[in-house]
Structure formats: structure tokens, C-alpha cells
Length: 216
Image (cartoon, rainbow, N blue to C red; front, side):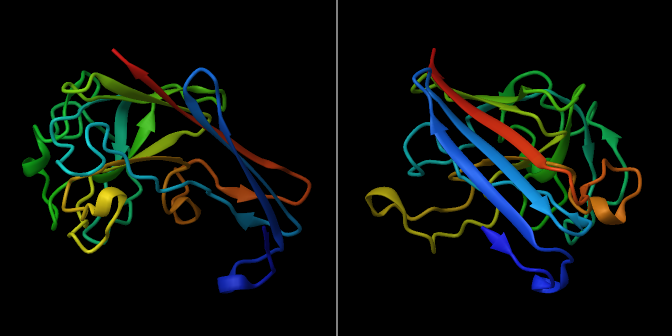
């Protein structure tokens, strides 16, 4: 993919490639690469939805989530980060120990209610490390997320409202799927305390994420 200089007012001609691999070990690997001819912000991710039980016929509120994250980036009413990194301890955002997605969801002050927040991965250093694990207790299916990125956006399908039709003509209602999107922190160009997303000419952006599936 080539994104020309000035597209949506972003500087630089950016060349992007994404490689998807299904491994024999049961993983879905995504490898991103990008280059630019001018300094420009690059923060690539994807927005796949998951329901490990029944492809969206029931909610994911009983899925059990663990996040390898002791901090998160609070956001304002428009979902833009405030620039802070806050501890998850003592908040509805604490998934350091496994718990059902729906346990504390109603305690979140948002409209519609639910999670749509960036979490700070512990000890992220650019190497592949575990960010999250989800377990579905009825089927025994599990999915772990490994990434080279410093953040993961957890979204609990708050805005799903039945207007999208998917597998077996299922209409996806609120909270019938979740997303775990690996990334640099949102709004990084405007937040000097966040890791930089600026790619310089001569540099290559690299980002690898694996979704590893298993049955317990």
C-alpha cells in the first residue's frame, strides 16, 4: 500500500506492507512494515472482533480476561487520552488477575457503558511478549495476544447495536464481541509523555502481533 504525501493532510509518502500468517501451532501472526520519505506519525493496528463461544450469538461478558498491564491511559468523554498513565489497581480496569469481562463493566462511567481503553503492557521493550489472555469457560477455548507494541486497546463491543450482520446471519448486538488491538498509545503526537509514533526517513516501522489459540 502506498499512501501519498498530503493524504488527509499527513506528511510524507508512506509505503506499508502487512503479512498475515496462520501457523501450524494455532497462531494468527500479523507483521506490519512501513517506510516514509518525511517525518510522519505511524501507529498501525487492526480491529478484528472475537467471540470464542458462538460467533456472536451470545455476549462476551462471561469471557474471562487477563491483561499483563498494571497501567492504562485514561480518556475524556470523546475517548481521547488525557496524557496520564494511571494504575489499574482498585479500578474496574484491573485485569491483572483473570476476571469476567462483565464483572465491573457497569462501574465504568461511559455512554454506552463498556471498555474502550488503551492499556500499558508491562515491561514492553520491542520484543514479542504476552499482552493478554482470554478464556471462554463453556467451550474451553482460549486466546492469548503477544505483541512487540507497548499498548493494547481493549474494546468490549459497546457500540454494536444489531445493524451489522455476520456469520450465519447473526446480528451483532452490544457486547457480543471484543477487540484486543495492539498499538502505540492513542494521540501520541499530542502527548509528549507517551512513546513517540514519529517515523523518520531511513527508518523502518516494524510491529508484530500474534493471536495464539488453544483449548483447555
